[in-house]
Image 1 (cartoon, rainbow, N blue to C red):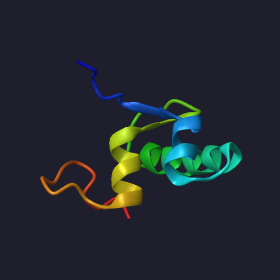
Image 2 (cartoon, rainbow, N blue to C red):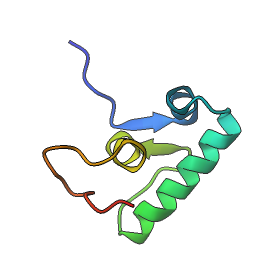
Image 3 (cartoon, rainbow, N blue to C red):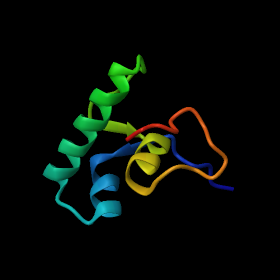
Length: 70
């Protein structure tokens, strides 16, 4: 059984959004800056899958820590 990955790479972000890898890195940088301001630890070049999903596709129906992302 495959477990869900917690962090996304620029290649994965680019594929999900249909953008270039350069644009994906800019998206990751922006999201990581937001997370850092919230006191989260970040890894350059990677972004939290959960934060990415909420930021681009809306809140999870079950709520969570990132309900007020944008």
